[in-house]
Image 1 (cartoon, helix red, strand yellow):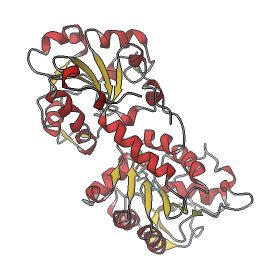
Image 2 (cartoon, protein in one colour; image 1 turned 90 degrees about the horizontal axis):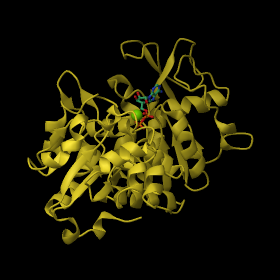
Image 3 (tube, rainbow, N blue to C red; image 1 turned 90 degrees about the vertical axis):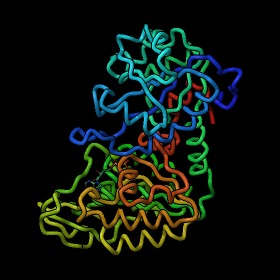
Image 4 (spheres, rainbow, N blue to C red; image 1 turned 120 degrees about the vertical axis):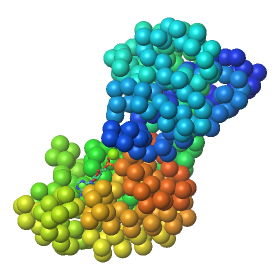
Length: 383
Ligand code: ADP
Ligand code: MG
């Protein structure tokens, strides 16, 4: 894999660069504001380096939130600290003329073109016209074999941006650090993406703390009643990763907060797991579990955390996530990631307290599960 740092000012001055970034951030339709700027800010270093070297940049990104980047483009510019000009798809062939207006352009949502998700060579070819380099700074989309991630690398000389380099370095620490003192904390709701991470970390860390809706799947597999809780019935927990009982590394909540109303307005009670009616659901880990998790986390050498411990968007169900977040922030080293995990810790003003915050949700989880990411393979990466 070639890194952007190999390109110096003399290689970049006056050159045109196609730069893949991640602008797939939450957007509030009412206030017309970006919900969280952290992941855009993460590209500043690469953008700045290229502009200072005298390169012209066409940013390429997708959004699953909005059809067009038009309402976001000004704030994207503010966040990057540069003026960004939006280019609609039908003006792509004019793009070189548009550079006369300024050195930083943004092609509108690449997924407007249906060929993007088909990894179509034709699209990659029309993107590449007149460009000298392709730089991928979008770690968070590297688990997708799409045209602006994979096909494009067959056409242009391709490099990994500073963000991808940083992501790989930190996630390799998560994978390779000795088991002693290494704690994995997993929660949230996207269960099928988290189980492979647990499998990959078994016997390679000291403890795996499981909360959120993810824990419900474990309870269910153990025959413990979960009432109306969120459970992903499509993913069976592989025999709890143990021979007959749960694997010794895995720690489940010892108490739970159950509710009859997930909006937070109903009756909420702390109970031992299993003590739940058919109409109640598990909304958070209980205070004893939060205390136990926090104690394990605070003393760790390295904590890797993804996924909230409960329905943390609702104040009444946010305590478990808050205690875990505060503990992770105090650990010697911490690596966290996941869209909702970032949003929750950002709301607690804790983001700056972690050693590394990954911009990759699904991509981070696949990397931590030991899988190969098509976008990295396309750049020539092998571990
Ligand atoms: P991340 O984006 O950090 O990877 P996920 O997307 O997997 O995390 O999960 C986040 C979501 O999980 C949040 O919206 C949260 O409300 C939800 N969640 C957490 N615990 C529960 C639970 N016990 N029941 C239902 N949803 C839960
Ligand atoms: Mg999420």
